[in-house]
Length: 366
Image 1 (cartoon, rainbow, N blue to C red):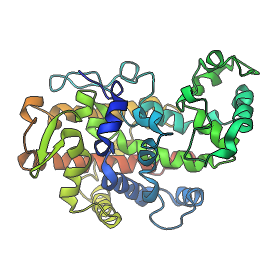
Image 2 (cartoon, rainbow, N blue to C red):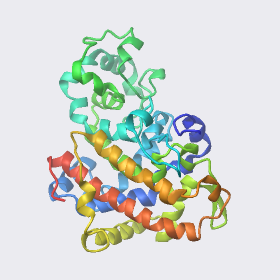
Image 3 (cartoon, rainbow, N blue to C red):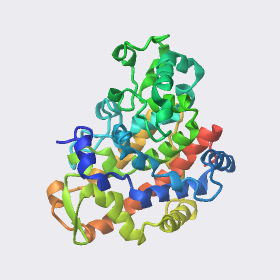
Image 4 (cartoon, rainbow, N blue to C red):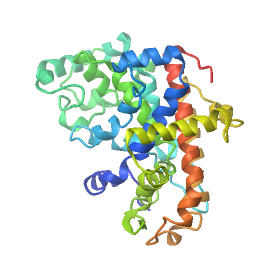
């Protein structure tokens, strides 16, 4: 069994179009749904952060994290878009954070880290890394454009500063090696250090990342490790060669909606919003927020990943790889997949709205 993390470098070099979460259409639809449900206070806050007072303020940044990870500086962030469930579909599907989130991180840890920005960047924490920041500032912070480039970090950091950083970089005279409870926040903190050093808007960065990752975690194959989350399962769709992951990301949603423009996403979001408010999902939408807890993002995100992963057994490959491999899936398979795609995008948008409410105001009225 090949996992996404184990072959991420090869995968990024050879299969870029296959890794785009829900694809542009899906991510923008999730963002528009969230736009339709966030509180007025949340809307005002994030429009201010993003510098965009249009109704597109979330949608236009919803794929920034995908764009970033395909840059040289952003390759380190690829594992943050999925979690490699080490399960055995279709016999069993399950996600365990401690088992499946690798050393380089995963979508669950990404949601955790990008939520706890107040802890990560508070002054007490930053004193632990003061000399690291000073070194970054002194060396070449001004030589690279911020925030999209992280080359200011030592080459072998690859965008992450973790618990062993003080030992790995003895040339840095750390003021406090033992940071107590703050030490757990060192994981993937370097982007925040960069922004703090370069006087960048941390909230802008976090907004873009949170929108992307909450969308990603609702795509079933982003919660599956088998064959790179289906990227190595060759299929065809409407006569074109592709892979199983890609059709769930892109082909199925785009065929159903009829396009992938911003206007298509807005229209799709309007349809799903109506289903949430007064239609198919009205009676169940409230339950989508069960257990949502900004103070325990790992549990919240893991429950979403487990929910999505279950569809790998029931819908994505219910009869195993052999039943879908080298097969055109644009007929009956596509028809059966549509309800799951709609439901998962609707859930993602609704939960994103609640998540942003919690970040912005500490509560949600949903």
